[in-house]
Length: 282
Image 1 (cartoon, one colour):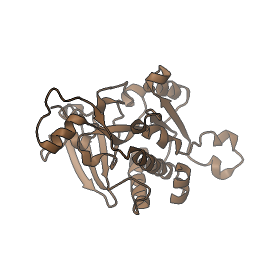
Image 2: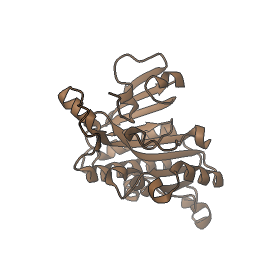
Image 3: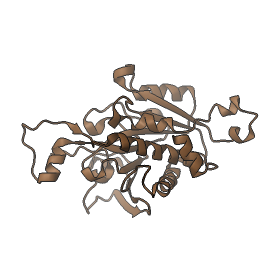
Image 4: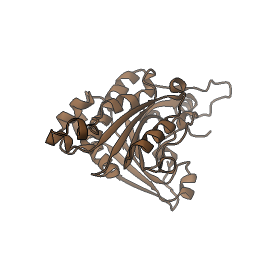
C-alpha cells in the first residue's frame, strides 16, 4: 500500500538511505530530525524534491504544555536558519478556516505581525519603521475563490518584490503518534493537498522564482493506514477510504497555530521578546 504522507521523515523511514539523502538529529525541547536531499534523483526514491526537511517532534503543541515557551523558541531558532536575517518576506496561510483540520494556515498567518506598511504609514516611528518588512496573505481555497493559491501568490509577488515566501499548511502523516505533535519545515516548497491525494498547483522556487519555505503540522491520517498500523494487516478493498482527524483537533489547531505564529514573529523580528511574540500570535 502506498504511504500517504507529507512528512519527509516518514517517506525516508528506515535505517538505509541512498547516497543523496543525509540525515542528522539534534534538539532539546523537540526531537529534531534534519533530512537533506541533495538532488532530485535521490528525492525521487522517496517521492520528495531536493531540499532540506526539518521535522520537530514533541509531546503536544498545546499552550498548556509547561515547555511551550522553550519549544516555541527552539522552533524560532530552526526557522531562522531557513529565513535568514534580512529581506522582505511574504507569509501565506493556506487552507480553509471553515474546516478545522484545514485551518492551520489561516490561523497561524493571522497571528504573524505584518509590518510592510510601517515604512510609509508609520515612518515617523523610528522603532516600527525599522522592523523587517513582512506581508501576510490568507489565500483561501479554490472551492470558494475559484483561484489556485499558487496563482494568487504569484500575482502578488509580481506586484511586490519578496526575498522569501513562507507558506503554512495542514499536512497528512502515516504515523498516528505524529498527529498534531509534529512540525515540518522545508526549503522545497509545497504542493497543497498532496498527502490527501488532492494535489493543487505547487508553490516553490521553480514556480514562483523566489525561495519558498513550507511549514506544516499533520492534522489528518488515512484510515487505511490507521488500520494497518493497529492490526499489522492490509485493509480489505471493501473498507471505506477516508481521511480521519483527532477528536480534539480544535485544541491542536489552536495550540499549533499560535506556536508557529509566535515562532515566526521571533524569527522575523529579533527585537521581540517571547511575551510580545506570543501576544501578537493571539
